[in-house]
Amino acid sequence: MSTTQRQATNGVNVTQLAETVTAIQQDPTLATFRFRAATTWLGGGHSRTSIQGFWGAGTEDSSRSKPFNLDGDEPPVLLGSNQAPNAVETVLHALASCLAVGVAYNAAAQGIEIRALDFDLEGELDLHGFLGLSPDVRPGYQTVRVTYTIDSDAPDEQIDELLAQVQRTSPVLDIVSNPVTVTMARGT
Amino acid sequence: MSTTQRQATNGVNVTQLAETVTAIQQDPTLATFRFRAATTWLGGGHSRTSIQGFWGAGTEDSSRSKPFNLDGDEPPVLLGSNQAPNAVETVLHALASCLAVGVAYNAAAQGIEIRALDFDLEGELDLHGFLGLSPDVRPGYQTVRVTYTIDSDAPDEQIDELLAQVQRTSPVLDIVSNPVTVTMARGT
Image (cartoon, rainbow over all chains, first blue to last red):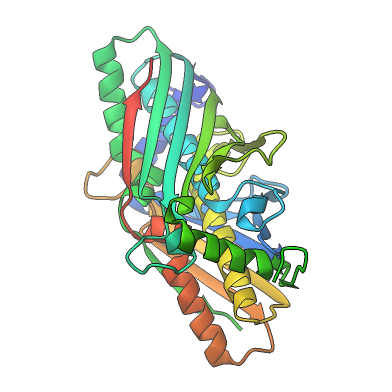
């Protein structure tokens, strides 16, 4: 099947998806992706991140003609000025957005049509950690709860299997659920 | 010191920061925060998250008169339409935004003035994980590298200590570096 015959399920180009899998199976180095972000502190709890280029599929991506800008800030109760969601709220967005891609793409690959897909997320943390008031309290989320609703004609069993596959392969769910090595160094 | 005497270092109300610490020391339950997000899939790799209310400091926050909306999408090479940064790029933003808050607030508490603060981040992943092509390859980042530059008159030793404190207490660095329990359930 050529790339000109586009098959879209859930808005996903299934032909391109299959071609991507084949390309990576033929050349595993194409699977390496390096994503980047540059963030400038703007005062108080406010910062702005610029996201544009990345390395992937064996080349530097040039599909974005201008950067995406994302702001972070804190609400007044956390000494900010509410100019943007805060960092831990943004993690919830990243997690749901990743799960949404996973469900849509995996469903498309299996021919499952999704009419609607929604997520509600809640993460709980204890400020003793961030404020350095107790070394025994972790600063991050103690738990994150995700509730999803999905509108599809697929039987429950197939949806359960789909969601299990998504949970095994979601990049952000993995990043949140499992340890990632983060190195920090002062630049010059 | 009363709340009317505002002292701001790095744009951070140090008086309010000290009062927050005192309030939590007197009533530890005030430290519980529950953040929320609601995400709707919009087709293909595109989704939109709404973030507004949260529970914290013993009450439901009502400081935001309208929700923040954050979009997620994939670039064309990952079958999306580039309407927003993708989920793993957004994680880099969340991490840097959290570190910026940590540096600004901890520096303010210590009387260290920061003139400028910038972060460059890079995260590397192997698409074999997300595509389910190899169960041995994790879907998330294998490593995240953070480089920061900071403009301050404080001696290097004090900056190093400040950054060590931030690394011990950053919520998103903790979430990325250490396991968080995520529960997923289908709603009705």
